[in-house]
Length: 213
Image (cartoon, rainbow, N blue to C red; front, side):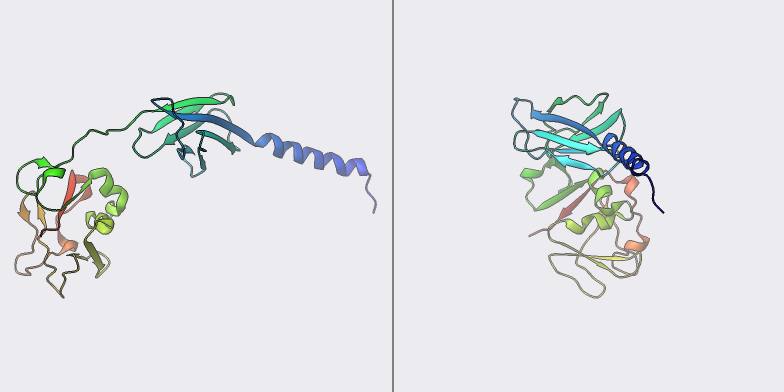
């Protein structure tokens, strides 16, 4: 059966035109406070994993099927995250502000508040946000997995054994966990039972790991 050529071309032209108009482009330039281009800054469509990074001149161009308004998040390590809503497809200029560069991290590993840089022992500090993002939403212990000198071993579905610098045994791990200066060693068992410990992410302000000498 033969179909008229025009009858075939019209649907094809309609599909192509729809695909063309479905792709929208948002663009801009990312600068720092001094006006220099910020190479490698991340631009992500808010609520999605779609994004792009700025080139060496701070420029970016991102294609999307989303319709206006389009909300994006612009971020870079050491800078405050900027959220912007595109109301048109005109190129925009953005300036990112430096983050908390001068905030001091205070630790309490020696029972008194002191600066992390002045602590006599090697101390790693995880904030509450870092604990949550590092897997601590399930168990605060899991958040220590990327901490230098710390080794985690999954014994059961809920029980995790913690060791420092590879010093571990069958039951004893040579680790002395404390919560607000109170021992978490289980009475009678004489080892840290993470499964039945009173550790909850929602109650933690920070976690400090002291490796010792």
